Image 1 (cartoon, rainbow, N blue to C red):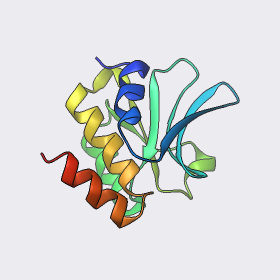
Image 2: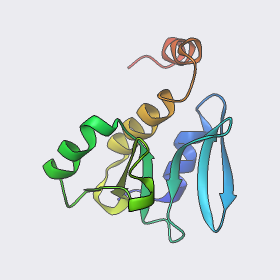
Image 3: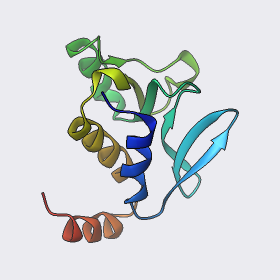
Image 4: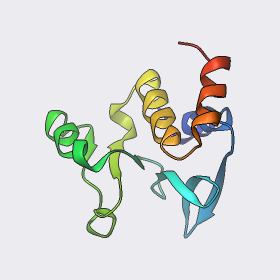
Length: 116
């Protein structure tokens, strides 16, 4: 099982990413764009994910993933239970979400420094 501290550790290695506290929620941003958030109790993580693929993600693993709350349905967003994720999957979800928000040049530089 992963924790909010694992989320922070992964995000800390991503260029231009930072944490902000908004209404008791940790939100992780690139500039003004939120790419990741934690519920107040840090058991659920919301993250950027392509709208056209999220129904399949949730349907494929409903014990792990959930659709966004109704007010977030217009965004490229989905939620996951941290208790159902392992560290590598968490890392992949976070990096993919972050990648949706940064310029291609930043992504390319990150890949160059972090091949795998």
